[in-house]
Image 1 (cartoon, rainbow, N blue to C red):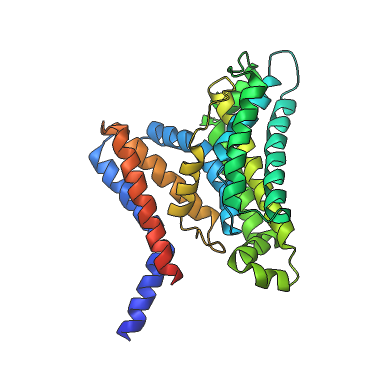
Image 2: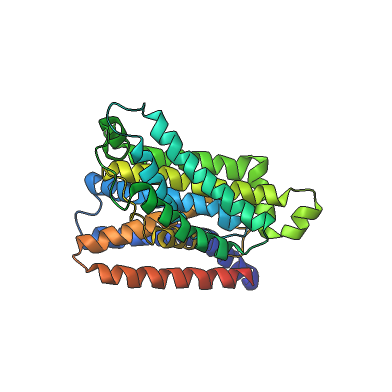
Length: 315
């Protein structure tokens, strides 16, 4: 009986531990700083995490499918400068730079997916190479200089408010809802879990494994394109050097949120909590005037702990 209770408690902590940890962090920071739990600060945190959150949700698809994507930061930079190039005042309607930015990301994702599936090259190698290629393309496209003079309509995407809520937060919430629906309530979502859980079994059951992986990488880079547009709009320039190491924060959030690096297990809700944990810790340490160097150390410790927990659960 006691053994059954222990197993039940262990399963409960494994499933809900990340949410309990997030609540505990928020409580501790609210005690440590009276400014933490204010409406203004909450909006600041949500605005700050929106870009990393969109990147993290995108790479969640890939990691659940058993892959990895290290090119996110470079894709964000490339899509940002491409979108900004078509966002000058009096040139094109807003839909043009937005669609071109997202389309650029989708094309990069398709190249990654096809190279991995048809070329039989490890995802780590392919996306590591694409990280360099996309960064180089961003520099070539912009001639190594920021793309400036963007239209007010384009700048509104990253800097505007709707009903007193920052637009990046609304876009982040929209991405959360759509992605959760895809993973939990569609056939392709079930296939992503199946491929990540056991690729051979998925193939034997008639699932088109290559097509599923291709979709995951296109989804990932397409969302990186959206994040690139938001960032370019927010800083009012398309920066070819933007997004350096952003992929690390995105992958960290996914791992902290409980998605298994072995594939087949994870959730959008967990990723969102992982993103919020990173954002809340960074914000809390800023409020407490703790140097940013410690933020990197704490983040690294959390990542290692999350991976160790994932290994333990997988055994």
